[in-house]
Amino acid sequence: MENIADFCRKYLEKHIKTAQNLYKFTNDRSLMAKKLLSLQRGLTGSRTLIGSPYMQDDSLLAPYFLYYWPVSYTQMWCILWSVKDRILSLIESCANEKAPLTLTDLGSGPAPCAAAFCDMVDYLRGEKRVQIKVLLLDSSSKALTLAKKLFEADFDSVSIKTQVCNMEKDFASGPILQEKNNVLLMSHALNELFAENGDREKICTHLLTNCTQMLTANGFFALSEPALLETSRFLIQVRNRLLKEGTVTLLSPCPGNADCPVLLEKNHTCHGDFLWTPPKPVASLAEEAGLDRHSVKMSYFVFAPHDKAQADEDGTFMVTSDPMLNKAGRVRYLLCNGKKRIAFSAKKDDPHAREQGFFNLRRYDIIRIENPEIRENGALGFAKDTKLVYTNYNG
Image 1 (cartoon, rainbow, N blue to C red):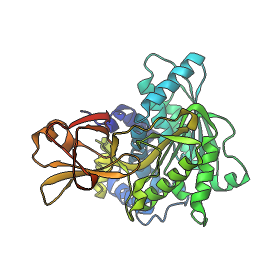
Image 2: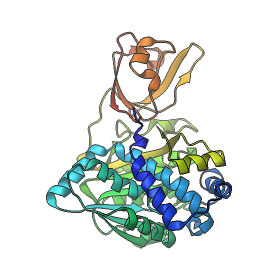
Image 3: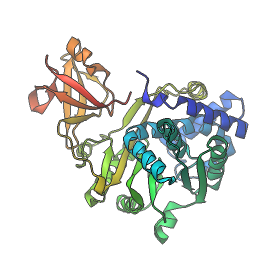
Image 4: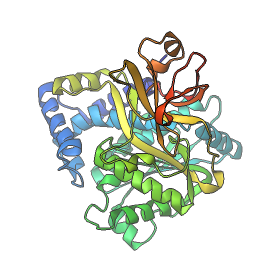
């Protein structure tokens, strides 16, 4: 089965080629690999670049566009795939009403996530025709200029508008959004906001609440952060506060709207992990820099206005760990039902478990388990008549 992250390959290769033609990157792979490592350490290692105007540094543009732009694009593609039915509904309603589909990308940078959404619409729309209006908000005028050039080159049915916006300062003056949107995106931006504020969790929640109030009734807000312990746990904390306010509900990935149980354990977190075969520029640059890039990982949530809430599904679980082999010879996963995490295991050589796809489970697969064995402490086991039903397979 093809991986979800690879469905967008033809689109992504087109954008990479456009970026190469527009910006005439150096062919010195060794130099680009060194710059990539500097970028990687500054963003996910020491994080010294967080909050800095690194997009203004021309020497970092090549590794960004040939590595981080495709990674962010692919992450958002996987997130959007989890709510593709809602996107199809938006396409249908906009096409019928002959109205544009409206999107605002908050903290867009050079807009890999907005590009992923526009391509997803093209992938799903079939014969339907729909115009997309995109607004990009970012503090970097250079990043917005780069995004505008790429959109003008690669998207015919997209109206693109950019606006320089410092979300911290502008939010202090009033609401950031003035018009209703079908879709809001925010990727890898929340972790850079209000870092010096002592009540950061509360003010970030307030910012997001104000943004979600500018969603149409059938819209959604996709929010993602790096799969790091600190950033993932903070995102989960904000998620919990948003849900308690009662103005939004979760569409993805969790099977419920209760407080996330992962925060009950110190130094635990939760993130998606999607298999990926990266395009050649990404793969070769990662290899040159000594980075592993066989999957994309991120923590994310997709929210919708509360009047479109989905009912919790009893018996539905999300896979939240990689497989683990214990001393007794059992392969174990951690599952989450939206309220608590539960162990689910099978003997490592169980042919029935293999036939049911147990050993191929991946993080953020959504499954239902029929007739499980009930083991010690409420853990679940694979019995001879146990059956797995996939409701969302992440590839």
